Picture (cartoon, rainbow, N blue to C red):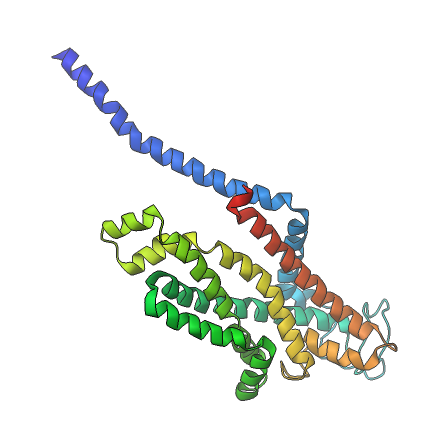
Length: 308
């Protein structure tokens, strides 16, 4: 009896330990995967530099009021068009406003518009792309024709039309940029879903009776969002350029708002005379766009399975 009990106990030990072993192996695999992605990203020096700049921009946008030397709206008419100095690091504009303080205030507007517009563009694009890619047939055809219509409009022209209808301001700019950016996200996601939906684990979920929405949410979307994540990182910089361009054209945020495009518009009147008025806003735009571009490059290289 004792020997039989021992043999029965010994026979059950492997089966009891098996789930623990499988769980541990899956956890190690997941940790290793994210560790590899992080390692590949950190190996890209330009991506790390871009991430540092993006972090500084976020800190500036969140806490810029605490270290801006002057009120960005304060006018000193006795000290107009002065060059960079100890009192005004980047000089003053035609109304005596401190340019450095205005650039710091413009950082907040740029980051808010860039992130918000791309967030809503990705949200709309993911929903439409998931519907088109999973259901296929006439649903796919209908959604893709709508996508083609939006892709046919030049972004700036379409944004100008929407702003003329809604009025100038931060919210109309966000809405206009999001409306004319979601179509690219939908097309990218649809292409990824068309390949992912034929995978064995998707067919297994269907065989087990999972609903369509659960399959999309749990199995298809998490494995199709890599291209969308990379596009979003790139597009934040593009949205910031779009904001500056709209303001430069006089249809973005109001002219009295300290925004980089408005400052470029004011500085363009003094090219060759007071070059600091357009040079420093231009540098802020260029550095910001390059930073988000480098981060997007790093994410693309780190997430691309062909490079692992």
